[in-house]
Length: 300
Image (cartoon, rainbow, N blue to C red; front, side):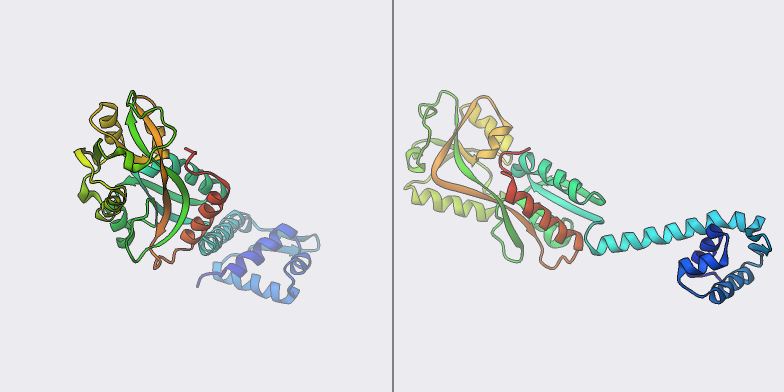
C-alpha cells in the first residue's frame, strides 16, 4: 500500500507545526482525523514518525529522514499540476513555427521576442522554408503556425499581421532609379528576373493577372528561387524584379526599391483550424496583439 498525497501533506503540517492541534487548525480538519491519518501513514511505512509526550510533538529520527522526501513529493506534485494547468491555458508545451524566406528576416525576431515575453515557458522551434513545404507542413502537422504571403489555398485559417508596399527593384544607375513611384505599366520594356513558376503556381497566376492588367507580358530572362538570388541578379544588371518593401533590408547596395503605384502585399499568420493546441490559441493572440501595436514590416 502506498501513502496518498493527503497523508504526505498532513505529515508535513504536523512536522512544521510541532503540534497536532495547530496542524489540524492549519489544515482545517479535526485533530482526531489528523491523528488517524498519521497513524495510517505510520502503519503503511512501518515506522513511527513522531514522538508525543508532555514536552510536545517531535519528529523521530525516521520522521526527520522522511520529512525532506515528503516535501519533495509534494513539490513535484505541485509542479505536475502547474504544468497541466499551464498547458490548458496555453502557457506551456511546444509550438513549431515556419517562416517563409521573405518574411523571416523581419518577422521572426519580433514574434519570438513577444513569445518569450508573454509565454516564457513555451518552447518554440522555428524554421525558414519555401511556400510549398510550409503549406504541406501545416497540413501534415509538421508546423503549428506559419508566417507567409497568402498561400491562396483552402483549408487554412489566416490572419493578416502586416501589409507592405510592393516595389519594383532596379539596379543602381537605372534610368528610372530616381523616381519616387512607378506604375507597373511603365516597366513593359524591361527584362525581368522572377522565381520559378513551379515554386508556387497560385502566386504566379496572380502575377500574370497583374501584368495583364498593366498591358504586357514580362520578358523573363532568369529565375531564382530565393530573394537573395533575385536581388543579386538585379544588382548584376540581369533584369528587374518586384518584391515587398521589407526585402530592402536584405541588400543595401547595388539595388533601388521604388514603390509600385497602388500595389500592396499582406503577410499572414496561417494555421490549420483542426489544430486544437491551447498554446497555438495563445500564440495567435500574442501575435495579433503584437501586430496591432507594431509595424512588423519595419522590425527585425
